[in-house]
Amino acid sequence: MLDFLGGLERTQMCGELRAEHDGQDVVLMGWVNRRRDHGNLIFLDVRDRTGVTQVVLDKEVSNEAHAKAEAARSEYVVAVKGKVRRRGAGLENPNMATGAIEVVARELLLLNEAKTPPFSPAEDAIANEEVRLKYRYLDLRRTEMQHNFALRSKVAMAIRNYLVEQGFLEIETPFMTRSTPEGARDYLVPSRVHAGSFYALPQSPQIFKQILMISGFDKYFQIARCFRDEDLRADRQPEFTQIDLEMTFPKQETIFRVVEGFLTAAFKAAGITLTTPFVQMTYDDAIRNYGIDKPDMRLPAMVSLTDELTAELRESLKIEPVLPVLGFVIPGVGELSGTARKALMSEIRAAFGDSGLDALDVARLKTNASFAPLAETIEKKLTEAPTLAPNGRREDGAPLLVVITPKLGTPAKWNHDPQWIYKRVGALRLQLGQKFADKHGRFTKTGTEADYKFAWVTDFPMYEWDEETKTWIAAHHPFTSPHEDDIQTGKLVNDKGAVRALAYDIVLNGTELGSGSIRIHRQDVQAEIFRSLGMTDEEAKERFGFFLDALEYGTPPHGGIALGLDRIVMILAGASSLREVIAFPKTAKAIDLMVDAPTPVSEQQMKELHLRITSRS
Image 1 (cartoon, rainbow, N blue to C red):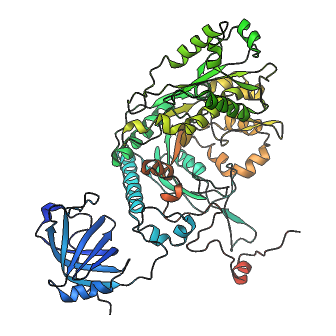
Image 2 (image 1 turned 120 degrees about the vertical axis):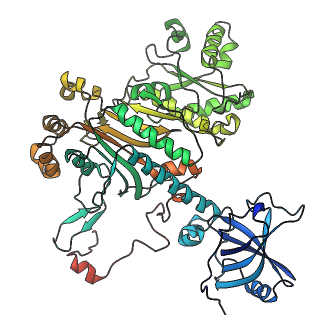
């Protein structure tokens, strides 16, 4: 027979008891985490979201409570009345926050029983992720998951409180809106009332938050749910949460300071103190120094060796005379054997394929009298900065020197991209950084600010070349403002590849946390952007008519940004996937295994929505 809770109320959470509670009468409630039967003594580890307390069921103290404990099993729901007792000398458990005490039970209530679970929430790791997602309610009981969602709640509250203090208004925007092109496929909702018409779930509140600025709200924010029907990966989900904000009359730096402020508050909630302002660099600088627009600054930047390779040296080494030569170091790798070095050189060359790039063996140059001075110059330039790990620890192992050169005949552009060499070398830098992560230790968490390298990247290209259509296409949503200089000099029409956007990203450890821009607030500029995208006035009116109408009624200069809350929490929690910080996530195939969604619907529902399913021929 199960017990009723009646009027019993708990006095403490399971994870709160400490040595100073010795002798106190307490009431605990939770789940049986583990059960150990020693005859006249039965030990139940009782768990709630705050932690675990060991409960002792002594037959001599309460024969009835002991008998109930004999029936209790893993994941039974129980209530315990008893007295806190310090554990005896040598019996403390330093691995438990409550390990200095135990509760001697006078009464045990069995509030509910449980089937034998497919896995125990007491386990630290469960290999089969599909089983975890199917039985998500069990998975969420695990200590790690409880910690993740307590952290998420603290981070979200810290961000919300900071923005409210800064004068931002939290305003909700619609879930059911119209379909507009935003780079990914929309989730569509058929209208029962308007046959053949559809709402779209928002990929972002982009247009609505701009309309709120036109409406005079000055500062808006929202912790917003967004939906995108796109292929999934570890850091992507079809529905996700972003910290969305917009301001009127801002400079880029105004928005940067606001974001740094709420990130500082969020990280403080997780026990990390950040130093601001963050590093700031242009897109071109990021590509030149890191080979990517999401720079991971935990590794040393790339170094240009173009000037060190003179025309004579290039001719002797058969290197293209005008293209860049780049080098970088991976710290702490240590001396490689001849065999290991040859294998690494082969791996690098295989990665570059027939692109025309090659690795220059600096160690081999040292053995040739003609090139030894060049090798010494390269070595000095690549290692002149001290190789300190982010936590300040000096790395004793010798750094690995990598130098990449273009062979004779290597093209200056690849798919119209003059920066392709920097990007290929940057990708190699990250690849080798991961390969030797155990050696340099720069990706290992220390629990300090040194683990987090933030950067702002600005002045992104306004357009990207589409090799398939042989045209320039927008690199951002069509409301992103170009630099005023690029409008005034005519580049917007005559030299699209050189136009810079007033767009910016906030990057952390090589991961893009969020993107934003200063928006177009003038109708004439917006019309020019649409024309430059090959969109006729009629097409623009059809897609964005309501927004273009709003621009005619005194739109102030405005700008904003959106950061992924899920991603911030994932990084703070040290999780490997967004699925670890989203309560009910989808699989890589966009399936919710717990509720078994998506599913077919009834013929009646289809009929009401004026829909029918046909097979593709």
